[in-house]
Image (cartoon, rainbow, N blue to C red; front, side, top):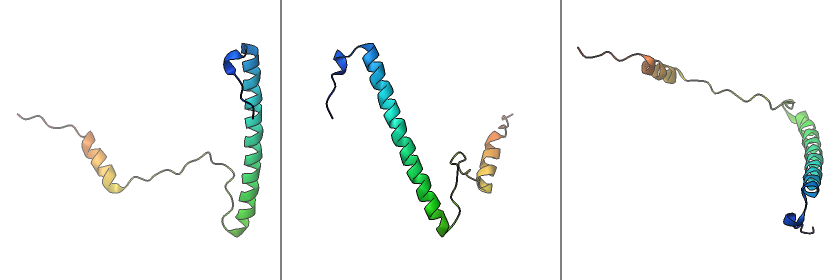
Length: 81
């Protein structure tokens, strides 16, 4: 790829370059996403169904001992008489 002297470009040229780079990245991301979705679909035949969304993350459960410690920390400390 040819090197571009960014310092010599005008604002309009830089904006056009940015737009072209953004468009190309979006194309590549969409193509890769399609590849990964096809791979998930292919792999889903071997076990659990493929997840369609990655929006929800697993939530860590709090252990009983951790709950007691946090409850103890919230209780006010009695003042010495």
